[in-house]
Length: 141
Image 1 (tube, rainbow, N blue to C red):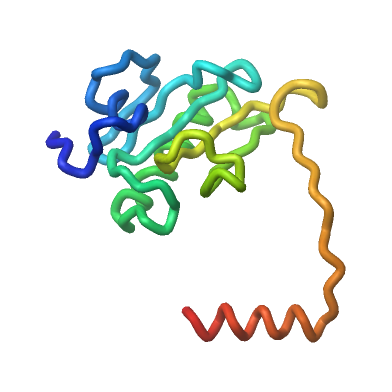
Image 2: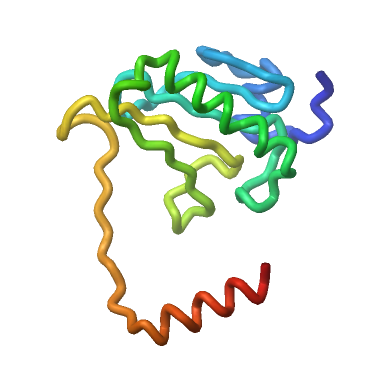
C-alpha cells in the first residue's frame, strides 16, 4: 500500500507507516486498529483511517465505509459483543481530540468505575428553536 494520504509528522501516520511500533489488532487496506497505549480500561482500542484528516468531515467516504466494519469486528474480537462499551470520535481540541488525525476509540465499560465516564448538561430549548435548527441543517444537506 502506498502512503500518499499520510503526512510526515503525525504520530498516527507514523504508526501506519511502521515508523513507530504499535500493538496492531487488525488492518485493512484503508483502516488500522491497535491498542491504545494510555487506555481508559483494559482492551481500549483505536481505529484510524489510513488517510490523514484532522476532522471527520475531511475523510473520504470510501475510508469511512471501511472503518466502522473494522471497528465492529475489533469490538467483537475484544469480547464486547455481549458487554457494554463506548465508540467515541472527537473533532478538534475543544472537543477533547488530542491527536489531530481522525480516530475512533473503542472503550470497554466493564463496570461503573472503569471505562469512559460521560456527563453533560442539556440545553434548555423551545420547540421553535429546535424547528429553526432542524430547518437550517436540512437546508444545508
